[in-house]
Each structure stands twice: as structure tokens, then as C-alpha cells.
Length: 333
Image (cartoon, rainbow, N blue to C red; front, side, top):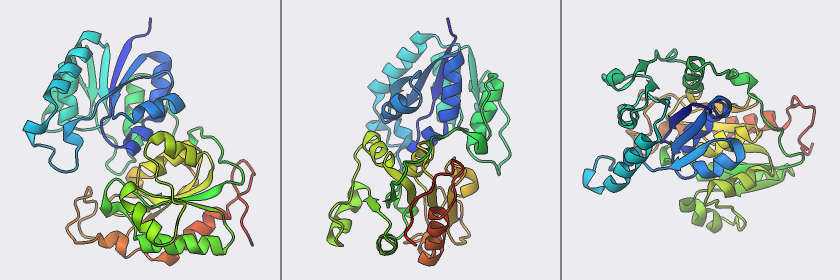
């Protein structure tokens, strides 16, 4: 019987997608349970079918009001703790240096608890781990955990990925988890128009709060995926993805779709999608970067000052690329 492994990854879609190589490798050696947001169930069927998902929305992952304690789902928290403790995990881990994650690991009573300590949380862990170099990509935290458990995780540039849909459209997604990560919608509209002027098929997608804007500007077929499953259906028909630093961009990478990813408050060296052909454009200088989405200005100057010409040049480079599989995206000349 395989030893039982608990993995805690409670944050965003992009964070969860970055864990994919680790989850796949771990499922070969362990009986894996993943505690994550409910959309992990959509990812599980597609990317890690051998993993058991326990959905949970941790109140401390909210962007605002995370410590309004009387609104916390205390009954759900206690039920989760009892359930995980009863499972008697051999190993429990988190790839984040988050004291709240580490406290949850301690509550499970797992015999071995792995993580990257912060603010004294080494006392919650039976095996504190040294962080990778501060300049390293977030994926490197999963590789450290993999080495600790004797799991072979590929380097970033060697992750096996599917090939994009031949002849697919350009999927332009204007949404992001936080508004400070969103490039101007006017810029996106101009980019879409320019792609179509070049006879490039385009599908526009957005978040729910952007839908009315797109409709008012004459985009009647704008897609508004309400689930990860609906987003996957769009990516399965795409050859290229263009969007913000966001979960959809990370998901595109693991669907084999290269992207142009626009970064504002965060740094691409930490959070670039794990597709070798992805082009990351970093927002303009700001003295507060990285600011973890808590922008000090009325509008994010890093993204506001990213010109359309730079984004168009990156799109042209990606559309005219010669992929490794020797298939080519059709681009009107």
C-alpha cells in the first residue's frame, strides 16, 4: 500500500497549476490528497487523475477582509481538521512559506511535515526546508520538495507539454484575479482589432465584471468562462494565448498553448507560465514592485505605461514562430 501524502495549496489557480509536475510525480509513489480551492476538481480530471481532491476555501486567502474572524467558516475548518487528522497521513507538506498553512499541517498530526519556515513556523514542521534562491521561479519550491521525497521533477524548460491545436485561434483573455494586473481594456480592444486586420482568427474572453464593457464596444461573442472547465474548452481550441499575469495564462501553458503574458505588480522571473515559448512582458519600473497586488496608486503605473507597440511586437514574434514540433500557426502575410 502506498504511503499517504497530504498536499496543501490553498491559493490561486496559477499557484495550483504550477504544482502539476509535482502532483503527477507524487501520485506515482504516494496516495495523494490535495486540499485546494474547488476548481481543483476540474483540474484533477484533466491533469492529475490519480490525486484525491478535498475542496476547501481558506478564509485567509481572501484579498480583502481576510481577518474578519466572525465571518470565518469555523464549522468547516473544524470539520476539515478532524477529517485530515483521522486520515493519518504519513507526510504532509506545503510549498508556501505561510504560517497558516504550517499550522494546518500541524493540526493534521501527520508524522512528517515538510515546508519552508517563516516567523518561527519551524516548530510546526518536523522537517523545515531551506528556500531556493530568492530570484528563483516559484516552481523551484516544488522541485525542492520533490528532491526531499525522492521524486524526479523536470527542469522548467523540460516539462512535457502537449502541442497546441493546429490552426487554432488566438485566445485573448483580458481578465485577472486582481484589477491591478489588468492591462487597459482599450489596449486589448485595439490589439484584437489589429489581429483581425491581419486576418488572424481571434476569440475574446474576459471576466464577468468586464463582459458589459466588451459588449458595449461591439464584441458580441465575448466568452465569459464561469468555471475552469469552460476555460479549458476555450484553450483546447487555441493556438496562442494573450493575457495578463493570471491563472488562465498558467493553465494555457499546461494545455500546450504558448502565450504573451503581461506582468504588472509581480515579476516574471518568479511567476512566468511554464511553457518554453511563452513571452513575458514586464510592466514599467515602479519603486514598489513587487507589491503583491496592493498598489499604492489609483491605477497601476507599471501596466498603464506598457505601450501597445511592445505587446504587438511580442504577438508578432509568437505568431510567426517555428514551434519545436515543426507545425506552424497560420498567419496571413
